[in-house]
Structure formats: C-alpha cells, structure tokens
Length: 290
Image (cartoon, rainbow, N blue to C red; front, side, top):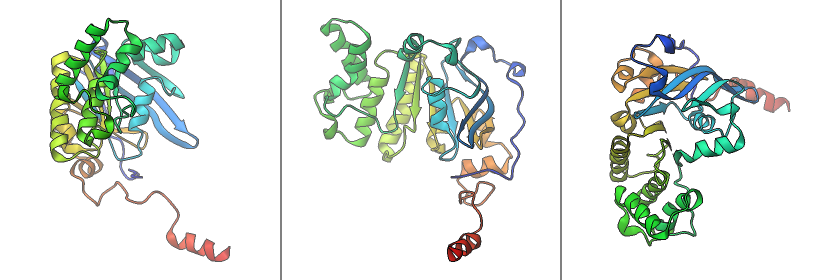
C-alpha cells in the first residue's frame, strides 16, 4: 500500500473561512472524522464538504480509505469520532428507519456493477422502483425504459447480465442507480476494468446525468485523467489526512512532491512502493534463527 511518510499535510483554511461556501450549498459535511480498523487509523480528524449539484472526486492511492468514506457517508459504517451530515441529518444520530429513508435518496454505482444475475436488464433497473414505490406496471415500464434510454441501452432491456459486455453492465448498473431519481449518487471506481471506449462513454454519461438532473455526484477513483476531466472539485487523501484539495486546475498546480507524484503517476517520490516493514535483512536473519 502506498504511504506518504516524508511530507507534511498542506495547510487548508477552516471551512467557515472559505469564501463562497455556505452550509446550505453543501449536501455532505464531514467534521473531525476519525475512523480506525484495529491499530490502523484510516481517517484521523479530516474535514470535507460535498457541494450540491456538483461532481466531487475522492482520489488517492489504493488502500487509503476512499470506499470506506462512502460507507461512512451512507451509514454502513459509523465514525469513531467526529460527525458526518447528509442533507442536514447527522448519520450517527439517525434511527434505523430514518437512515433507511435517507438511503433511498442515495444512488450507488458499485465497482463491480453488482447486477442481479438471475434478472434481465429491465428487471435489474426496475428492482429498486418495485422495492420502494407502489406504481402501476405501465408507469414502472415507462420509467425503466427512460432510465435505460438515458444510458443508451433501451434496446438491451431483455438481455441477461451474462450477455452484456463489461461496459454495458456498468451502464445498466448506472441506470439502476438513478432509477429513483436520487439527490446524490456515489460512484465506487466507475472506470476500473473498462476499455477506452466504454470509459469515455461512462465519463460523458456521468457528466451529462449530473448536469441534466442537478444531482450531486461523489466519485471515488484513482484514474486521474478520466476523473479530473469531469470533476468540479477534488480531494486527495492518504495516511488518514487530506493531502490536497481544490479544482482540478488548483490541484494540478499544487507544488507538493507527494501530490505531483500521484497526479503524474511518477514511480519515484515520497509515495513508497513497499508496504512499511523492517528491512529484508532483518526478516531473513529471523528466518535463519527459527
């Protein structure tokens, strides 16, 4: 796992002091977030905001807690300290029923797509609508076809997941994620495993859907080129801290060696290739002694 031991986290202005930012404009507010797995602290007192109607990207090396952050925002995990607020509601304080109702307003595109393999494309997209809305079948059919049309797959409605390419499956999953017209959609590594054409289609779809519906999008990714081409704001996280944040242009201009290495994919720099460990010589000597 990549680490960033040799560089200090860049100083940032407190949220209240940042010009042009108000709580009403923010859909998600994270304050003093601390979350640990055993002895490893994944987040150590971070603050971040997700602005309404914008695409915000959470980036960083693999294993730095990007997907964990989505689980904290959706209430699948609870913070050890600090607060996570979504649409003015503190996640940790919600009852089970209240959290359930809030989650209905969140869409999720899983990294693997997570289509139900025994249902065809139409029924996969219809599934959340059937679960949460009592609609006549004629109305449901129209809604599903509209969602499939939005991702260019209305003609594939009768196909089974096994008949889809990887890019098609990801688009069906996207249609399902927007089926209930959520206020926010979270994308977990949406570009992973996609060919260049499928990746380009997904990038365009995410931007178009976000702008057309004025919903809020959170993209978790380490694909720098694709993500920065559509994101309005970036956070780069590592070692439990926010290493950089700003518009794609601001982050690209960041003079931090750590940020530059990540954004440009350079092999040498403060982000180490090897997971922290004692020296190889020490390990080998211990093996001989045993």
